Image 1 (cartoon, rainbow, N blue to C red):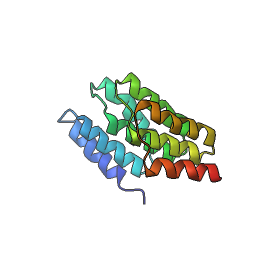
Image 2 (image 1 turned 135 degrees about the horizontal axis):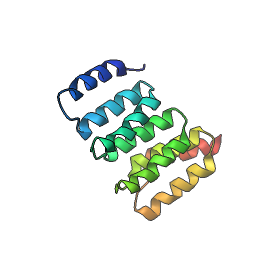
Image 3 (image 1 turned 45 degrees about the vertical axis):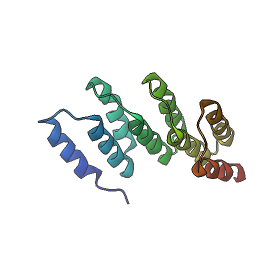
Image 4 (image 1 turned 60 degrees about the vertical axis):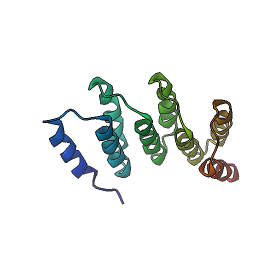
Length: 140
């Protein structure tokens, strides 16, 4: 099921004619793109947000990481994990899980394992999703 990202885009465009979008609006649009498997459109929106003076948050980055992971674009997911630091945001377990999952699904189990191990020094506790992702990629 790909959702109705096209309807969300029409509403978003209509809103932008009258109002300045907020980070919440951007996050909703990113989620619609992610659900609709519209990674390129989501990437364009992420790129345009700072130009529109919209400060992205963890939800923005976690959504684009998830979108990249669904498209098996582990390197892009990793890029956005690093971009969080540039935006002065601390990645959380969801951020790491997205990149770990993406790396695992792309058969880069060593990379996934390094990310998993990197969680501990950053005071993040792996959760069930973290462990499941690592175990599934090591079994492949």
